Every structure is written in C-alpha cells, then in structure tokens.
Image 1 (cartoon, helix red, strand yellow):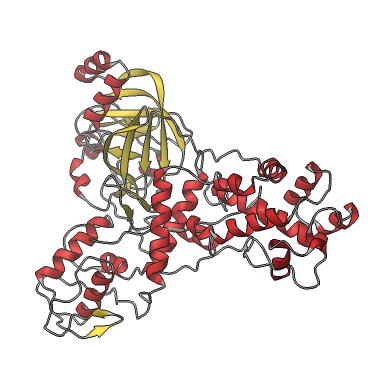
Image 2 (image 1 turned 30 degrees about the horizontal axis):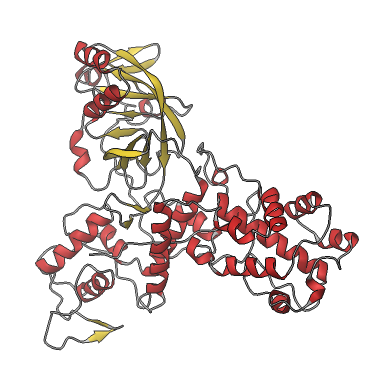
Length: 529
C-alpha cells in the first residue's frame, strides 16, 4: 500500500511575517559551545556594544526585558545548537535560523545572533513561520498567544532552554505522526527517487489500451508502494533500483494499483489515467515532503487546546469530523467550495438548526447562473421573488435540502443538507459556492439534537414541513481547516491534492521550491450554495 506523505514547515519572526534563514553552524562559536572561548560568555559585553549589535525589534524587546546584559553561556549555546539540529522533525530544515556571524563579528554581535535565532525558532515552533492572515483575506482561526520574549528570558535564566523549546510545537499524536511522515518522505527523496522526467499528462489511458507512458507509470506506482516491484518477467530490467515494466499495455493489475492510489488522493476511483491522476503520479517524495511540511506549519497555526466538543471540516479532503468531549464520534463526507469560490478557513459556531429551510439566493449567483432565467424556471424550482431577491421555498428540491446548520460569521458560510446527494459519491467534492454540504445531514442534525437535549423539538420541527428554528442550548464550534496532508481515521498520514493551490506561498516561506503539485478543477454542477 502507498507510503503516504509526511513532513515540513517553517518559522517566522515574532510579529510581522519576515523570513529568516536559520542554519545551525556558527563556526566562530564552536569553541564556546564546547566550553572553550570565554570571550563569548556573559560579562564581557558592554551595554553600549550590545545596543549597537541588536538590529531587530524582537531582540531589542528581549534585551529591554533582561536590562541589556549578556545571557548566553556555553551550556545555553549548546542547547540551542542541538535544538536547531533537530528542526527537520518540524519540517523546518530548509529554514536558516542562525546565520554564521563571520570571523569579523564582535562578541556582542554573536550574542545578539544567538538571541535572534532562539526567538525566531521559538516563534516558528509555537505559532508558525507565517501569519496565515497575511495569506488569506478570510482567516479567523485563533493562533497560539505566545510570549517568546518572556519565555526565552525565563528559560535561559533557569537553564531550561531545551525543555522550553521542546514544548512549543504541538504535542499531540497527530502532529507526531505527520512529523514522522515528513522525515520518511525526506529519506525517500534522498534515495534518488526524484530523478527522471515527469510523465506527460496529455491524453487518457483506459484498461486494455497500449500507451508508451505505461512503463513510467508502473515505475511511479512501484516507487510509491502501490505495486510490488518485479513480477513482470523472469529477469526484469532495472532502473533507479526498481524493476521496469517493459510492456506498454495498461493491464488490469496496473488499473487496480491506480484505483488504490486514486482513493488515497481523493480522485475518482475509475482506474482511468487522465491528467489529474497522472499529475499525482508525477508527485515524487520531495513533492510529498513539501506538502507534509506545509501541513506541519498549518498545525502550528492552531490553538493547542481545541474545544473538546467541536466540528472540524477538512476543506482540502472534503471530510467532516464531529468530536464530543474529546472523542471522535462521527465523520462523513462533505462538499465544499470549488476553486474560485473557496470555502474560507474560519472558526464559527453552530447556534441553531433550521428545519425545512428557505434559500435566499445571493446576488452573485442571481447575476451569473440565474441571469437569464424567467418565471417558468422560477416556478419549476419552487422559487419566488421577495424584497428584490429570489427565494427558494422549503421542500425536497431546495438547494439547502431539509436542514441548515446556522453559524455565526459575516461570510454567509454554514453547513447544510442538499437536494443532490449523488454528488457525495464523487471523490472530487470541491463543487459548491463556498458553503459546506453534509452527507446524511438529517441524520447528523438528529445526532446533534440528541446530544444537545433538543431531540423532541427537532423532530417536531422537521416533521412539520415549515421553516422552523431550533436553538441549541450550547453553541458548537466549527473549525474550517485546510489540510491536504493529514492523519486519516486508520491512523495513517494521507496526502491529497492541493485543491485550491494554497500550499505554494507557505512552502516557499518554509524554504522549498514550488515543485509539482495537483489541484482541483472548478467543476460547475449546480447553483447551490
């Protein structure tokens, strides 16, 4: 089975998004780190020299706090170096936190360099390298509130720098698994699996077809663990350490492997080799490592203690998870925004259930998809005009289905049922205008109503056929997240396509090149929200 992806992330300075390179080696500091080189120990740096050496605001705030005295000794330097040497576990190995000060650097400049590196690395671990609000026009998920200046000062004073740094990144099992997956992907990339040309994505190959790309396709399936190497001849030729499938025939055995890969990447499991499937085959270990590094970064953006009872929607994978008192009790498919109508990343609570909802069609849809419809179309779709808007009345054909989960936000984003349940059978479910359609929404509403003690009211409202509100006694937080590398319900790290092409700016901030990636296409299937 496929070795799913894992790994990678970056760090930023305290405050604004600034990209610092961080490297462990500071050749001039080697003596101090080993205990020699008293010139780098505290007590030999004047306040004036230190003030002259400090150039960034975060480091200046730190020295204001410690009254402009030197703080780095041999033990602290060694602890910092050792921590930075392990930054690959966080996908930060492409980031340089500690620059070589150079042979001409003063002792004060070296002191300031250690402080700046420690602050940047701590901020990267604690809340991420990049401020997500700088990348997205809508981002309302709270980031960790971390005082890196105060934390570093206390850690150095107590001689607990290593312990403090170790505790800044997420400590949960999911982060640890994604971290392990990143290290594994990096190791795979180091074995030379990234060599060779990409497979041409033009044209379609179906079972039984003959195509010159089949040997390359088989090689990629073998490299990703979907086909066992060999078995094609007594002495198969070898390329890059893997037996090469010499035949150009797209056999059922290869189709089965492709279907397995399509399932893992959220593609239609039809075994057909089209542009989207071949784009995934073109992903190499380095590409998967990059996606996992971005996933680690996004996990660092999140609060360390999420609400125990909550609903998480993974927009990238189009999956919903319902947690009750810290336990996953339900998961189901969802349909989310298509490219160009992306579902935003936000935190917004459900505060009521709406039975038999009406749908007031947004002006953006009225002016586009419904721009040329007339009275006959409106009547056939149970729509009327009210107060300058088109409104679809309650009923089984309503685009919101039979239930709406009202949420508090200023983006008109909510969860709801649908009148087109067949779309949940698609592997690619980025199809809506931004809202989230929930598979089996009536059953999900019933579960929430039971958990919140309003089941009788909900059943009465649902059966009444009228547009009715049922308030929840306690609001349930909903987190709309974007993770195309994540731990699935089987406990494996899975990598999906980057449907909105949102990984690029994050991966570049983490020091990666753009590489290859697969994204969704903007399919138009209906006018629903």
